[in-house]
Amino acid sequence: MEKRLIAALAAFLLSFATLSARLAAIAVDPAFADAAAQQTVYEVEAASMRGAIYDRRMRPLVNTVRAPLEGQNAALLAGYESVARTAPDALAVHVIGTLDAEGHGASGMEAAYDTLLSSCGGTLSVRYLLDAAGNALAGAQPAVVDRGYDTGAGLVLTLDAEIQRAAEEAMQSVARGAAVVMDVHSGDLLAVVSRPAFDPLDLAASLGDEGSPFLNRAFCAYSVGSAFKLLVAAAAIDAGIAPPSDFVCTGAIEAGGVTFHCHRLAGHGALDLNGALAHSCNPYFISLGLQVGGERLRDAAARLGFGRAWEFAPGFRTASGSLPGDALLQSDAGTANFSFGQGALTATPVQLACLVSAVANGGGGVTPRLVCGVTADGCALSLETASYEPVPVFGEAAAAAVREAMIGVVETGSGTAAKPAAGGAGGKTASAQTGQFVGGEEVVHAWFAGFCPAEAPRYAVVVFVEGGDSGGETAAPVFRRIAEALF
Image (cartoon, rainbow, N blue to C red; front, side):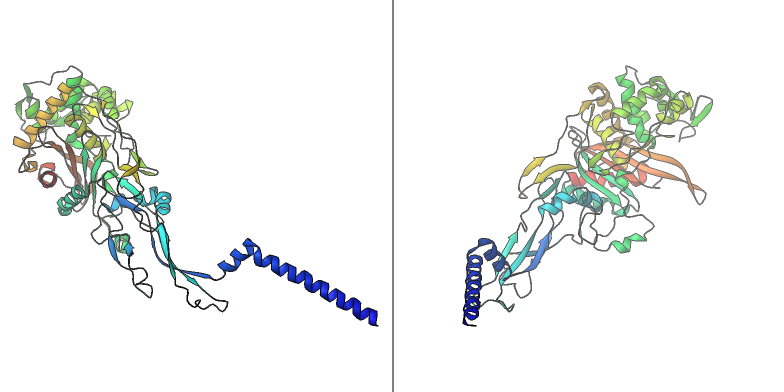
């Protein structure tokens, strides 16, 4: 019996010694020590932020509404601000885009650069030390944990906030339409406006709007009309075909067995290129286009980007528009239609801005750009997107002749309502038939595509008014307001 008690006691002592050794090992093991420490830490997220989006001058287009953080940790977080993603007067909403319910990009640049903008964001938390009972540890002060909150990192666009705002204000009178402002030398888009716009603070209110406010009309393709005459004139001169100086418009012209009428049924009489563009004479440009040839016109248009979608960011692109096919251009009637911008031709406001830019910069086709690059701090670019020099499409002589004629359109022709108070401008009106009818009346789109100032142009400005009928009456005044704001 005594031997059994001694054996049991020995076994107990051995077990106790083993347990004590194990506890000692646990106490000094860093892994277990860290785990114990983690169990005493509690964090409360105070704020979160998504990466910023800036204009070309590093002016924020989002994250602009700021206020002091409130709540029980307000004093501790006195150096930080809460940030709302969207402001009531937000600019360029169609370009910036929207977020879904989980805070991820759903459209626009928010969607195209969702991964970047998510990674550029951060959180702000308060960390507490707790005892075993879950209460704040006596004497331990809460600590602020800043995980990349408000670093300024984000995306930089080519837009100019001042120009964007001016263009949006100028477009307030337009129910449905678009406007773009482009740097004629670089192709950078400085303003992109679509009307009507949606309210980013109340998306639900725009869902049932018959005006389709979520549609970015600046990137959609429409019938072009007489604005295409700029390309016909430039292509003719570049091909060595002298535009006639004494063409007689009788009010109509026949091509391929089809009679095409001028908008002035009585005719314009004798015209040179300047007069034909100033008065937008269809027979003049049909005659000139037939001399150039449909395929040569289409080739010049393609080199300017017509018929091709421009992708500004992953999945964020314009419509491609359309150019007439071979079968249409094999007939004189098809080429005639093409020569004054009707028929199978459709284009976006961005593509027309490329055409105007080529005329304004001396004949170079530009590559449109909407993203400058990425910034790590909101002060300087850390990664820049590629930009390209203009590629020759027309010769300087052709571009200069068309520029002079476009200035005449604004000074004395159909575009006098586009003339700014200072600096001068050149441009072209257009009233584009669509073949679509509402209430028995054909829908006619209005355009004004021009440049400013008149000498040494810097900006291409294209205004589109859906169903606006007359480019000279509805689109030209909007161009004037934008041109005046640019100076």
